[in-house]
Every structure is written in structure tokens, then in C-alpha cells.
Image (tube, chains in turn red, brown):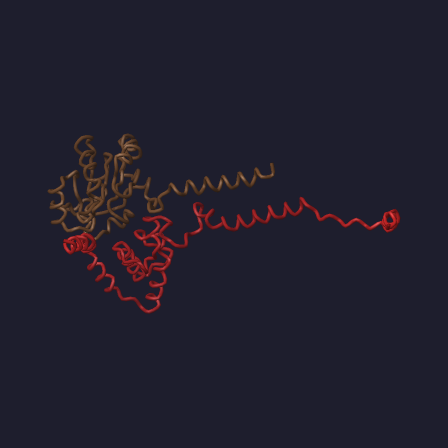
Length: 159
Length: 172
């Protein structure tokens, strides 16, 4: 009984992955693009800057999702065609938004993201300075030697 | 009195984080909203010839990316059928990374809500539309602009609250 159940489970998990037909085709196309050593290095490094949209905490370099394969093919094709990193970033963000970049570019929508930490530090400094200024150190009062002696003299004699 | 400011700050932070909990980080906002549909040229499933973006001019439509291997597509399927049959919503299906035979078999088994189906066998149109998982549904206005995108299986609430009002206004 349990073996049958297990087989069903395995089939259920394996089928959706297996029956996305063109994965092998994409893989073959990917391998067919030959890059010179510097371009190959650029391709490999670039993949670490890009997010796989399916499994969002993985880069395109790490992900085995079919979509990551498609995006790797696009990046590889575009590098082979001589596009700059900026052009490839533009291609991807036009479709998937800034989120596809692990290091979002500085623009009106991301300025808070980039400036936020610095703003918080400045805010903390301002608050700290104001607190310090509000409580100036108490000056040590000059000791009045005459008054001190009088106080000591007024002490009742020891029994 | 002197605790009021830190208290207000803390409450503000709680509110901010609370809102954060209600967001869905899995749903990547599409940069294509408000823009004309991306150019495409796709074969008609079970038909002849190619169709391009001009197909989506003139009337508001839904464009639904689906596949026969996609389990969540089954979840939204009854709703799509109902919208097409009872409310006259025109739905263009884009069959994503699928085998034509498997797609046809799936439709004859579960019913066909689509006015027309285009085959995106390698997923290249999907890439241009920013699709990262099926099903995804786009609402296209009569002027061929993308008015809204729903990620994941469409449900009654999302249709009623988000898409239907835009649909009603999209014919203008």
C-alpha cells in the first residue's frame, strides 16, 4: 500500500518538472553560445548580481528553475552580442522591475533604500548631540575653605 | 511626557512592520502596468498563422498565461470558465512552455474558457511580459495597454475588487 502511495507522490512531484518540455532545448542553446574567456568571466560574475524571480533568495547563478535558465540564456546571448552590462540590466528591469537586480540602481524610487541607513545614522547623531547639550556638565563648586573650617569648628565636642 | 516621543517612535515602527507583514514579497510588482503590451508574434494553438500585439486592440481583454503541467491553473479554471460564459469576458490564453497535444487534451478535459489560444512554446513571450510563474493574468484595456496584473491563480475576490472595476472602465 505505502509503496504505491510513495510512487504516486514521486510521480506527482516529478511530472510537473519533467513535462515542461523545452528545458533541454534551452540548455542546448545555452551551451551552443561560445564566449571568449573574458566574456565568459563577465557572464559568470554577472549572474550573481541577478535575482531568480521564482526562488527569490537565489541568484541566477545558483537557481535551477526553468525561468532562471531562460534568463541565463538571455544574458549569455546579449553578452555574446556585445551588449554592455547596463543594456542587459535595462532589458531585465523593463520586464521584471528593479527587484531582479540584487543591487538596485540609484533612482527616484530607490533613493530611500540607498540613503535610509545614512539618514538613520545622522538622525541618531542629532538626537545624541541634543541630549548631551541639554544636560551640561555640573561645574564643581569652588571649595570655600573658610566656610568649611567654620562647619568643622561647630562640631560638638566628642563626649 | 518625556516618554511620549520614544513611545510614538516605537508605535510608528510597530505600524510600519505590521504593514510589512501584510505585503506579499512573492508578488513582484510589474513595471509593465500602464504600458502597451509587449510586441509578440505567436502561432495560434490548433490554428494557422501568427498573431501579434494588434490582436489586443479595440476591446478590453484578459490575457492568461497557463500550461497543462501547471497545477494551480486548475484552481482558477472554473472561475475563468464562469467569467467567459456568464459575464462575456474575452480571455486570450497564452499556452506557456507546453506541448500543443498536452494543451489540447487538458482543454477538452477541463473546458475551454479562451477565445483564442497562442502557443508560447519556448516561453519567450512570457519573458517579455515579465512572467515568472504560471498562472499569471493581465488585464488589457481597449487601447492595448496593460491595466493590471494578477500573479498566481485568479480568485473571485481579486476579480471583483481589483480587476472588474478596471474591466468596466477599460472599454472607454
